[in-house]
Image 1: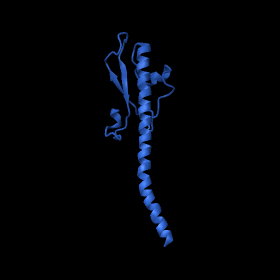
Image 2 (image 1 turned 180 degrees about the horizontal axis):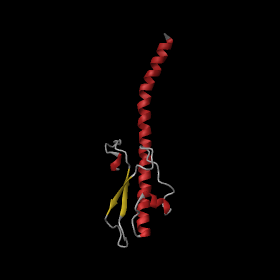
Image 3 (image 1 turned 135 degrees about the vertical axis):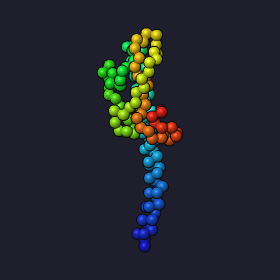
Image 4 (image 1 turned 60 degrees about the vertical axis):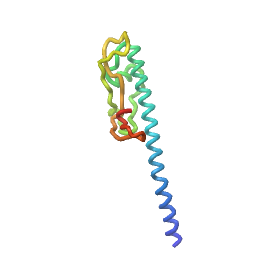
Amino acid sequence: MELMVVMLIIGTLMLIAVPNYTQAVKKAKESVLLEDLHVMRNAIDSYTMDKQKAPQGLQDLVEAGYLRKIPIDPFTRSADTWVADQSDAMHSLDQTEPGIDDVHSGDQDQGTDGEPYSSW
């Protein structure tokens, strides 16, 4: 009988703890995603200003030394799923050719703010 009571208490605690744990993990991944997006967007802007042309892909940022490596998307767990937005717009007067000007996650799930990660 005592064992049944202990098992019931443990089960109740698990019902409370598991959702809190999964929510904390999701928020941590979102923080990593926001930081990775911030770093990559700054690298794109720096590359564009320095080279007077936009990078043609994320690999250009690595080859030019603006990033050590392309970060791994925390939700898709791959560095190949980033979606780079191409634009024909020029962001400076000295820019000679268009290229990528923004980057997003390739994951379609919704974040805690209700927006899909691909729109962050």
